[in-house]
Length: 479
Image (cartoon, rainbow, N blue to C red):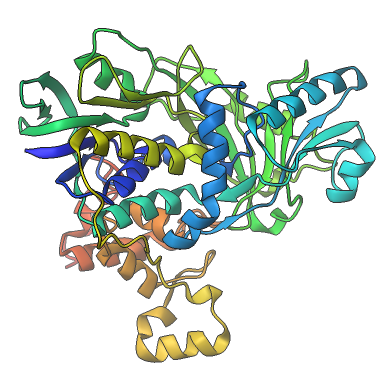
């Protein structure tokens, strides 16, 4: 009998797990896929929003602003890269300047600090590459950029190190309320008993909620397509550039990433496919078309990859948080943007509510510190030489585009909640995220995975079940 079971290992579920691990109890996180951060949390804008966009008085506004204020401490404790690069909302027509002022007033009421209205010329002083048609901007210095993979992994690894059990490949097929709590049935037929349930299942959070609660909810997968450009143009802008929605479109951002690339997107298209993360020629064309409104010269020829992600959109456009009509069942559902920004605050809120229900006390030995991977590329020449002398694998470069060593890949596999797939290694080390997009390094990464996990090469997968890369040997005589 667990005290609490969390369903979903995205950034929200992992943040809740970390905060819950501050308390005494038996806690389990179950995830239908085979790793942390395989859904919405791996495919988003990676923006820590300031909090000016959400409606006054909404949960989105409350948890966005609070989560933003917590991010410096969280990033430091979890050894996650985070930078407050600031954001601008661009206005392209004089008649829309009152709408920019409305956004400013909303942000002030939400408690967002340091907001400013800039003229077009003032905005171009900060960002010289802005288009000349920008006539005004809302400037939010507290907005930031983060690595969503590392943030999610940081929460999850720290939770595991503090005693939370993780079970992957465990989709939920049923939940039954009992006198003692709940019985959760998994895809393989296993039963899990728990006193409380926390629903953090992303686009599937309506499925989980509706298994238990009579008051049904609906989650609409909202697909967003993105383009990533090479690091050679990552410095085109320093701030995150949003657009005030106009007749030109819904607003495509242009932003640097925490690792030095340039990110464009997303589109927004509602879907009924909870696994539909394909991209389209039309969607990517729209990304390029509308991103070009913000900057003078868009480096379209520097695009190195595209992707899409699904947001867990509620028709009410609001987070669903807290204990529901069934005692002991807690929702962290409909967590769309600003969900990444809100995750530290949502994690703390849900964990404290559950701990109160369980009468759980805080542990004296909770350790908030998680150390990320050693990164030789960020060291001085002398530090790197000393590391390689001790551990030569850090001198063997596997991914040339991102300068990722064998030592980092081995460490990513053998650490807490270690990588088990090519994409798992990629999310932890960035091997394969560079200009060639795994064209050169993937065979070697596969060999390292097979060696470290003691499995055959044809058992190595790109990501989830069935995504095998090597099907058979072309020359049967080769050992």
